[in-house]
Length: 202
Length: 202
DNA sequence: ATTCGGTTTAATAATGCTATTAAATAATGA
DNA sequence: TCATTATTTAATAGCATTATTAAACCGAAT
Image 1 (spheres, rainbow over the protein chains, first blue to last red):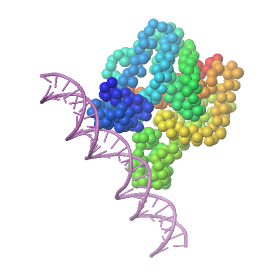
Image 2 (cartoon, protein in one colour):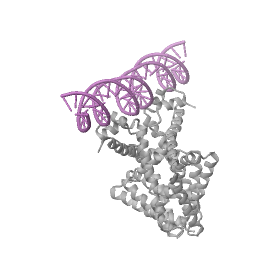
Image 3 (cartoon, chains in turn orange, purple, brown, cyan):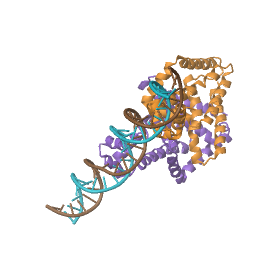
Image 4 (tube, each protein chain N blue to C red):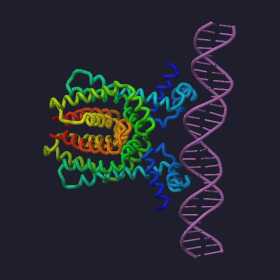
């Protein structure tokens, strides 16, 4: 693999693991095994490199909504599908949820950049609008209780993301081993679905 | 007020606002209007100062559970009371939830220190055990559906904390003004209670 | 008035970081 | 082959940060 993408991938690993501020371009170079100046040669500044990593992850996470949302299944199955999709993905990328929120919240300047990026693509707003439509239809049909689509979305994200954000705390505080960690996440998965579905009953 | 506590309070403000890494002892000194060496004179190292701030906040937040838990009201009223208590407190300390999780998750070394502090006080475990007892009683009496007390606790914390963690995102992404921000939080408050109560129906 | 303790300051050592530059090296095409 | 371009390195400027030290300051007790 060429050095340029090696650097990008090392940066991704380190940024996600330790966050932007705690990761130096020297760290990244060391991880790749190249000279530190190369990081700047290819990506000019640490911030630019970071944004490349960040936006890619952000896009990726958001795009995962697309498939369940467009499939032709019932509203409850969709919800189950969304939860499963995210749990599967986060199990292999345990620090990603924290990474996204951490960087998005800690740095207001960056938030502006991401915002512009986000609204630059009209299909994303379209995706959200379609989601709202589906919720409102389900409410109209009496399948679920009345709820603001945004509130439901926040509930979903809260419960999923928090399961992964708190996982390191359990691991350390209760001395969880690998098996217990897995079990914790597995239980959260079913519990999150249970909670969401019950909370939506008309 | 004496300089020592001025420094502590400035540190608290800055640490909560910008996080540990992004806050320098020079920042703190500037905020107080004193020499940077004074910060070290009183608190030796930045890390020690931070831990003093952090542990105080952590204790405070946890201790807020005590009153609702010990009062003699029904399980649903208790839940409502807990949610209200935290919403009230976080409304005046909007960045605190993020602060706690951010620092707790980002730094594994620190987690160890907090863990020791946490388990040093037996009344805290006692508090948690009493909470579990109350949930299990409510389940046995058929007031709520079967659920692991830990899962319920996580659900509660997730929904509350996330309302405040995501608030800056709404503020920026959707250009919320102060009134809209207040309305957002107010709606979340009722929605969180609604979601929790419904999800617990037997 | 002077001494003494606690407080505050200025100065600085030591370190680590980002970003740049110029030179060296490797790769490529004429 | 050789000239040109792309990649990589070493060196370093410039800055910020933590922590320490020695000296200055200041108020209170003697």
